Image (cartoon, rainbow, N blue to C red; front, top):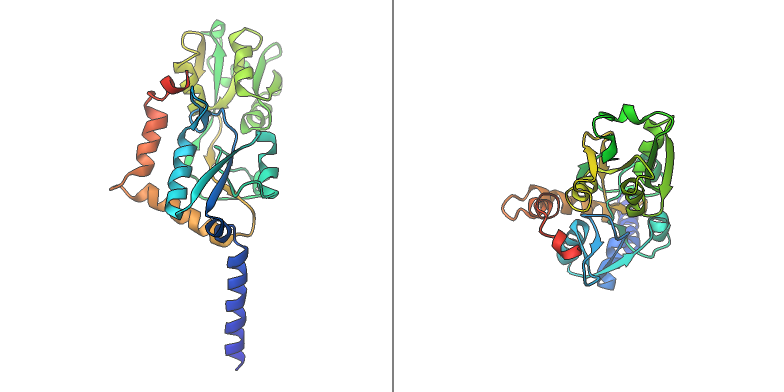
Length: 265
């Protein structure tokens, strides 16, 4: 009798947890809502017609398809994106977010879906003068980055003597370097590499050895084991299934090939 009662109790508890799971709510609603901050090449950006495209967009479409639901994208400024998740404006953050211990205190992360690091783009006038990040850590040098991202954390960690300035948008930070008002910008390696091959060609120098190790993950509210279990299984399937090769295909599409640049210029 006691064992039967305990078994029934655990079953009821599991049912209650499932009812409160974000995954269950998505299925009941018939819609997956993702939060992201447009303007982060090649993860999420607007094409010439104002449509959102990019690595995270393709991943979100695949995720919604496998859930059997519609996809709703909720553009959100970066400095309010965690608050947006916690106040239920969307179900998941899919916006090139680095897994950090500080963020992990507020939200939970899936297993990493991609690994990157912070690198430096220098004004071309510094060619031959600055050979490593250490060479920049001197008074008189100015380093810029985007406010509130891991680039800012890295800038303040590695550069104690140089001046650090942050901007709301990474494009504004890079403009400071292009215009000679700053010496270097620190930001994610994929973005820096793409910018150098495009608008920064002949104007910037890329110190492409990463200063940091940064795994990116999808973020959800804490305490949702069912949703987290689904996400990690989904990720494992698309990464390991070499027949379909979805993960490899979209990585090549957005990080190796550059055809998509014509859609955003």
